[in-house]
Length: 66
Image (cartoon, rainbow, N blue to C red; front, side):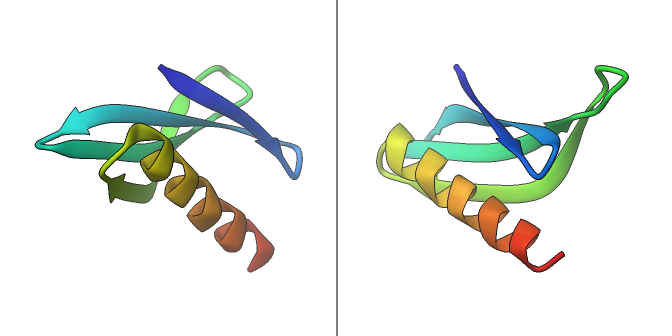
């Protein structure tokens, strides 16, 4: 399952997968040509929601820096 985010005119997807006893979330950007590019943001947590939320916070902080 994935969560879509539209931020600053760009489209991102938070992807989640089980990892050991917890969850790992990572973010990919959907480019205009439908090409997906992983942007290097990852987060892990005990629950999927917590991992997704942590990855989203990292993305928002990164975009504020630009």
